[in-house]
Image (tube, rainbow, N blue to C red; front, side, top):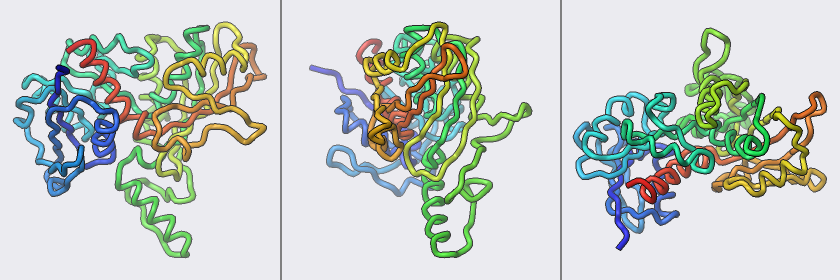
Length: 339
């Protein structure tokens, strides 16, 4: 008989936490019990799972007894303080908060790219889930890198407001309504209007002029691909889209890869979907990736300014494959191969 696993989700009342509940059911994950935790302000909520309404319980340091796997989708403070408590109680933590991504003892995993790194969970009892923009980037890079080593990457991200949580989704919805009706708007989540606007500002600015989001994208990509010297630069932009990120990617490889060969590589790589018929107006669209678990790649064309460069455009659901589905895929490999 297949083993059932006792699961907890920390931050279950948030956008990613709620999506995790849905994906566990959708993928028929072998759940024995599912316990949902959140901060005190969200404990009156319920979420449906397999025909039952589950209460969201108040998070505490001693709530992990008997739990096998904990998904952390809450803030960095909760993860930093409570992941060790969960591990001490006997659980393995899969962390989506960003707290542990660059810890050298914690594996940072995209299952299609570096599944073997999951074994390093034994170091700390924690596996880190990358940022949504990183997940979307490393899949096509890995497909190319396996054929010819990637030398340099220039990436611009166009990230949906759902990356910032439910408050940002509501802020965009309200601003669009107010602007269409000629009324003044309020901005709380972002420093400027997001409705009908683009903000080249995600997370805080650092001393070198890059934002933390851009620096994280560079560092996480190098760690996942196992290449600390990879030349990569990033610009991260928040766009007025509810769900689904876009990325413009320029890649230089050691040997020239033609667009035809790149399409072949992408089509055979797990987790990627080629959508590349510009003559028929077919190319990746964030709105069409919403609710799916594949990274769509298209606009594949030679970079005419260098000898071995390609330009790509990708789109993916930032809440699903970018975060929640990737975390569940990590858990599936963990229980199948290591627990």
